[in-house]
Image (cartoon, rainbow, N blue to C red; front, side, top):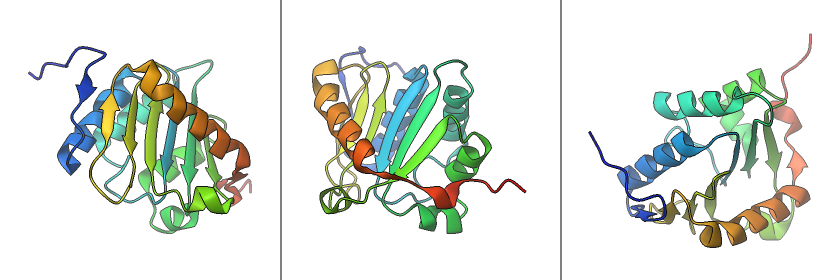
Length: 166
């Protein structure tokens, strides 16, 4: 049985295994709202059974549930059949996906996971398995959340991911 660190203690996030563990801890501590920004969504991110179980729990958690996902190239995730995209298509009113269109945002290599409890996982470069994370750290979370909100407002809805109503 693993022991969680104190809520305000940093989570290890210096290699792929630590990043995956930090993602799982943060997803489990999310109540209703989650923000995710990844330039490229591949099968190593948000596709495992445990992560998808937590994402489904958040998305179906009732009133106020919301997952916002910023992806540079959602078309690739769709073509690859990423499991998170499939979940989003089943719950499009709760899981919203947007694509950055501003050059500054498209050139931003960072990845975020931001929880509604003030937790975060931040990787300055999504391609490098290094970052910082905490379950609860409002001072560290606030600037990341503000940057995410600004990117979200400038981004366009990923219409290619919307399920077809036939």
